[in-house]
Image (cartoon, rainbow, N blue to C red):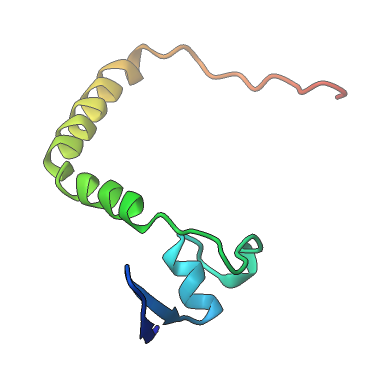
Length: 89
């Protein structure tokens, strides 16, 4: 990505299709077909979500640990699993 110029409120950027795809959360530019000139990309919103998630790591790990303990407790209580035929069989 390259800064081409400056505006009154920001910058004019040049970015490849792949860079734009990654910027908006896609793996590849082939998944992204809605970006046109004038499309606004909510970078602040995406950044805030990632920032919040990164600071919730300890909380999320504690939740995952509790869920794993619950699963270990429930696993022996599960009835036998019997495959049911799907419709049309």
